[in-house]
Length: 396
Image (cartoon, rainbow, N blue to C red; front, side):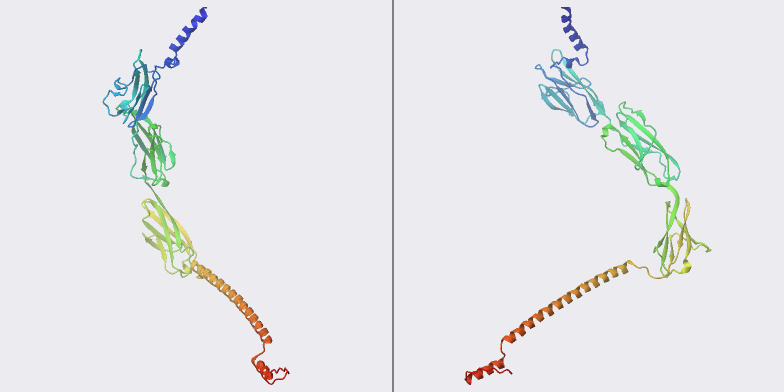
């Protein structure tokens, strides 16, 4: 008898000891709500529901225990707080332009006996500010090592910073976190150190902020860097296949930062140098076989010099087939083909006319054999007048 009577006591103890015992006991008068996360400046909706209201209204209170709404009646004069829905089973309100100070636990209450409450934790995310990059000097020399710093404040929770150069990721130092004076947000910072090359001239070094409040949106800052490096050069002939008697330009195409300011032309075995000028081209007004040889161009800037070489071989003056000659040859071929077609057409047409004219003459000859000519008809007529029954035909 003792064991069965202890079962209700065990069930009652379990329902009271277990977390959320109100839900386990299926108390229809217990309201329920949910935790919410909102980005600073956004809008959050607080929804409270109950199955059995016991003829009582629901109420929302803020973390300072100030009543916001009791049923459909506004209790706090804050225009940011608006009623969304009020029924005996639900009370929903919205808070717009949410600030960091609005974060905390909001309470939904129903004044039954006893009073029942439900909590909703509102978390406000602080949006990180656009990052700032410092530490860049006006210009860097090739193979210099530089360190850039990046900083962003106002994030909550603390944001993370990443670096990249163009599409290439740069491995910076771990993000450093410091609490802001307001005690709610954080300032994050990071540094990256790397050696520059000539390929980095004009490259963008980008610092990006990663934070859940951005919802995948890009928030980054780019710092374009300038790298000074020694020049390079190459020689390009114009035309590419020079021939005797032609005009030739040898272009010395220099590249560097700063760009080459001076070009020196030389020919191996020739003294003194051919030309020193700011213009990069060496001009041959009329090529001769004697111009053949190896030419050198030295491009110079205040970062250094570079020498390029080109071997000139002057070809015979026989013309190289040009595009215009090819064009005229194609046009001539088309014209000849059209003339050939016209000639074939004329031959067939002449053959056709001759054949049909011969057929006509043949039919005309056959018709003359059957019909007597005029002279025969006259003779026949005279014979008939002379009467007789003799019928004689005279052919003249």
